[in-house]
Length: 420
Image (spheres, rainbow, N blue to C red):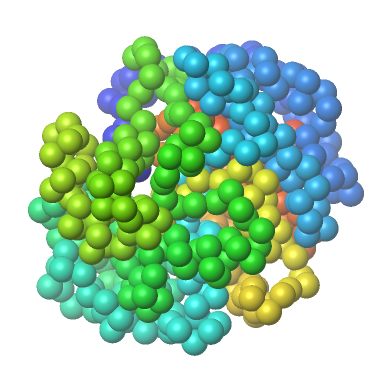
């Protein structure tokens, strides 16, 4: 459920040069479009771009892309193109689910802030006050980590441990002093939420967010139905390997499903204790190294959300819409999500609560990218002032090149996030 280790430097330089040459030649008709974009126009990609999109997908070996657009706080457009699996050629449809990867994080942040508005959690209280996991190191900095630190990525914790079965979790720096992007911190906060709600992650999500928001095709977990509707991930265009790559979450979830069926308890209801109890049974039926700790077979607030593009756009609508229902976060909390939460000199981008913030020549935007295993690449962009948003979800390692072209063609924004 994590990004693959980087390639050796020499191979990285060679493949980057090859990919640049390919994409420059293939995508040339759209270079420079951003400068001509009219802020008064909507963010639906131009017809000429959409007509050419299948050619771009073929060149970049991206079997499927799903897109959706929010205007004036409402979902106004969505489209899925391509196939779920390059080998079976099953076409994507409106109900096809994409693996959102790190786009999971802002959605989870919204749930945490709902709980904060309800007085269930204090964003500035140490997490150890609510739950101290046995894999946390005995270190004074651990006792300082708060939910606010988690949501603005200032915990000092690593993104992911290399060996979670044996390695304790400890901050590299004092919390609140710098930005360290951390999936581990998100998972710890997820387990705090389990304790506070007495529910699994998916149960809380369905009750507090997915249900009220009409996100009927969203889940952090797995089932046979979700498996049948979910896209497969594919290698990047420069990857020299052939055939279908390991599917990571799909592979671990399918193994956990065997135990879930045996128990008669759906994976959507599993909490950390269930995953820990199931771990030996799952390891007994999987290749060594696939499942290493309970977190590998538990819904993951940092990485395992799957949705349709339309469902993710419904979430984005909550972020840009000024009117609100009682179940939504307060206007003050929504503003806080999209406001810089920590001052770190010299940064070109800032951290809100769950979101990255970038000041552009046309005003501030918020965004997040997602990458699972180098085979799923996704992007979500919002303009709160303009009450608009764009979502692009793909099922290939070169999907990041494609979604950048979508963003540029549709919005006119050429973000620093695309280059730095």
